[in-house]
Image (cartoon, rainbow, N blue to C red; front, side, top):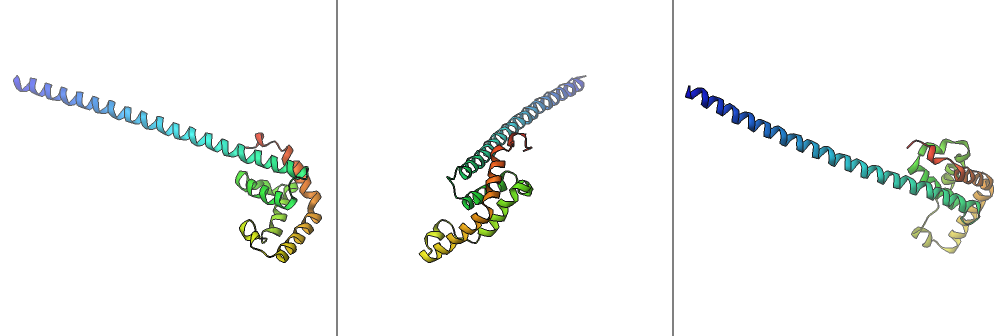
Length: 158
């Protein structure tokens, strides 16, 4: 009889131990899920902030193009990079193909520090090239800027 009681006590201790371990594992799992949700929410908030920044930047540059506050080719280059980060498939829209075209025609032109290192004659040659591109595609660039300024980005899937 004593052996039976000892076995019952031992099994009871094992069961209680297993129950405690199960509770521990459940709490750990709950904590992990909570942390994953927090990370997901932080990522979603960051992605939304980045998306909003890209859309606002596209609209500001588009407005600058339309109000002649931004050179047309520079606006195209900036918008192309922003669209690449926001929604690369937008370049396929008919009104926006000019952005890709102008970017392609001007991507060989040095920028920033490389531009500063150019001689005056090299700068003048590149500026003439930029002016020619702007003359050829100015109306299409303005139409693309107007399209982007009015584009319903909020209805676009993210």
